[in-house]
Amino acid sequence: MAFPTSISAAQYSALAIANGAVPSVTSEANLAGLFALVADYDEVENIRDMPSFGTPANIVKVPVYGQAQTQSIGAQSDAPDLELTINYVPSEWAAGTTLGDYVADGVAKVFQFSLLPSEPVDLTATVGGLGTVPNANVYFVGKIESLLINPSRDDASTATVALSIQSDFFGPFTV
View 1 (cartoon, helix red, strand yellow):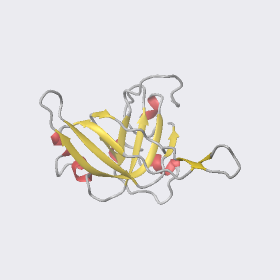
View 2: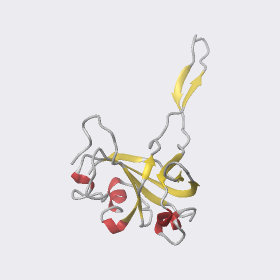
View 3: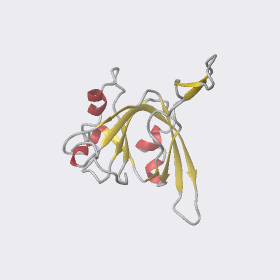
View 4: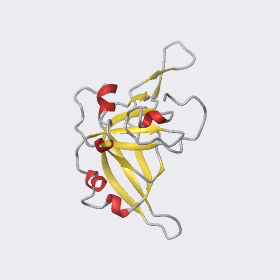
């Protein structure tokens, strides 16, 4: 498949975490290679709301002597705050589970965010996985810093999963 070519909801978008080591060279091939098999990653399921992925603008106004208005330049931006809201299933995030053990473990991991208008076979970065539907994939290195549980008496209990960013964003790429 290729990049999505029409306007549509990204209702099947997904986030996967590679369980392999962060490569020393962060090329598209090295990053996607960490998601070659279903056994190579763990999916963050039950995502209710996703943050914006990418580098935010940081436009700075610069005064110029003799001009009536300032000029603007692009400066280095701060990393965005990545907080996912998930429908909280305690058994998936308990201590001793894969996702539960990722929380605040201090180990950098490669994340794959996939923008998907329809459900793929799986999240592998292969023709038979993500390649079964239009897709746009963004990779970054980061950590799961915290899990904040939000009990609810009248709706599904949710949790906020905070991610820190340890690299630039790479992509979007497509399979």
